[in-house]
Amino acid sequence: MLKKNAAQRWWVRCIDGDTGYMATGQAASITATISKDSGSFVATNDTNPTEQSTSGYYYFDLTANETNATTVDIVSVHVSSKYRVEPLHGERFTSQLTATAVWDEAYSSHTTAGTFGKLMDILRKANTAIDGTVTAAATPTTLTFTTDLTDPTSTHKHQLLVFTSGDLEGVSRPIETYSVTNGKIVLQETLPSAPGNGDEFTILVQHVHPIAEIAEGVRSAGVGVRATQADDGTIVLYNGMTYDGTAHAKLSFTVTKDYSAADTITLLIHSGTDYDTVIKSAAAMAASTTLVEVTTLTATFSPALTYVGIPAVCELRYALVASYGSGDEVIGSGPLFVYQTPPTT
Image 1 (spheres, rainbow, N blue to C red):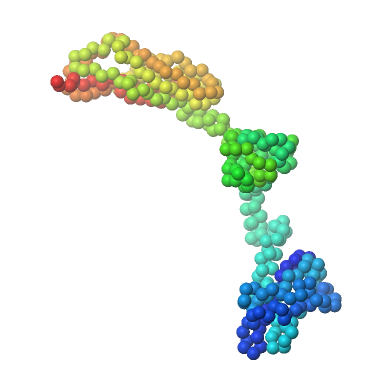
Image 2 (image 1 turned 90 degrees about the vertical axis):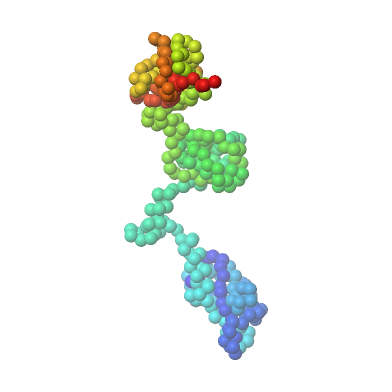
């Protein structure tokens, strides 16, 4: 089966009539004539075929004009009657043209319910991707560039763009905004380098959450505040020593509020077996769209604490609690005082 109006190959094989084996080296002695729509036979444009290696298989290169007909008949002959030339129907020729026809077939023609064509159509639609190219309407930067896209404004907002050529091939970034004017794209995150004019990309039609949305989701889940304590925040009392509430009473923290919200954060230091006693309240942290860092806190105890000899090590622990709109959250804990028998000299 030939493809109409397309340049292609016509395959034949040459058989030695005496031996029945494939005949090699016969290209110069093989010719062919062609008839279109039952018209007169004329010599093919390719006077002699080309042999595939030394296999005894040969092919004629047909032009698009030679196959521009509803029916095409081709007769191949050898100058010697000793040899016969046979077209490869159902063998190499047919498989080659069938594969080409399948790959070049329009997918829009195969959407009948229950067929594999319809299944492929569903998969294609479920994995829709948009191809585009960077243009020079404006100088590209690591964050924004113009393209040849013409879809309506905001069509590709919060979708994922992947470069498929150029120096950025394989690099992906989420799209912050898209405008139909010059197909302008602004990315959420900067690229390693600016793309070049003509660089190709693919947009995956799936929603990608912006960083701000993710941060707000973290906040809503109650995990928006974190604290780390300095190494020297523990006070050691030996048998018979009294802590007067001032000396060595400093606990040092770095507290980070990492989301944007209207909640006000109050930091409290709790102590006691069940962390049920508030021993220090820090100044409130107002809402902010940027990271906030504060160092605290001086804890004063009243009455003074005196350790009277229990010959074992025990601890009074603290918990650092963030109290805000959606509830309380323990963001740090550790030993506040360690009571132990003094070392023997």
